[in-house]
Length: 331
Image (tube, rainbow, N blue to C red; front, side, top):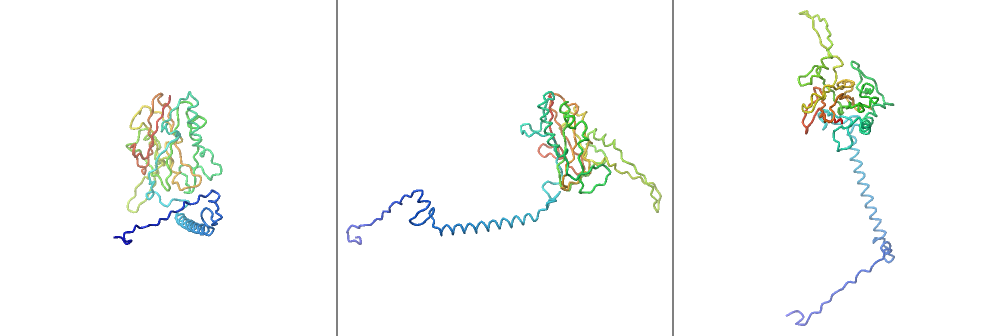
């Protein structure tokens, strides 16, 4: 039996009254309990005080971290250089003009009979050479081979020496003889080690250029204590101190179309532009390559390569090093 001796149990149930609906003005300020958006003035003060202290501490921690990071950074040179850096010691090669339209890729296509097409590439080159043509206010000097330069010197890239690849000649795009400008990427502290003699894998035209610059023979008479003999020393001519450049058909194609190529001002990057030490106003040296008789109506696949002892070459499409490829199509 139940505790109620069989009598039915009468339970009591509490039914909560639904909350009183508030108007928008009452939500903003309720005069009955003195709340603003559901909080009293004391509650709001505590909330603001908490977040004020929280963000002050957060800003202080961020400032300490940034100051610690910036204290390790040198504004004049990177902390990690050459072999220690992600860039490494092998400079990449680039070319201009390069279209901003990604669908064009690395193809330079134009018809000299259509002014709009040739003007498009001329304007791109004008934009690229703007800093080279306007060096006002920069501390720069005209350097030459055999000249002693201070590491902090900035040598001028003289665009007047580009010959037929000058602005006055429309960079050759008005006469179907386009010019391409080559440059090496800047690597802090990198100093080129040049080839003073032709290499077996060099193209014949480059071998001829190097051989045409004969070493200067300097003979001196040395009197030795035990034996007397004449010792001839061969000194490298300053003009050979260049990172040589050659352009040919990619993968050995179209060799017959690479017989008439001109390089300005020389067929290489002079070493007096190196090393790059983040000098104010520094501009990378350029080599202008003019294709005097490209085939019409057929794409010319070009590979340009830089030659130096400390420039590793790889012609792989995936891991290309020490060279650059582009295509020329003259309609």
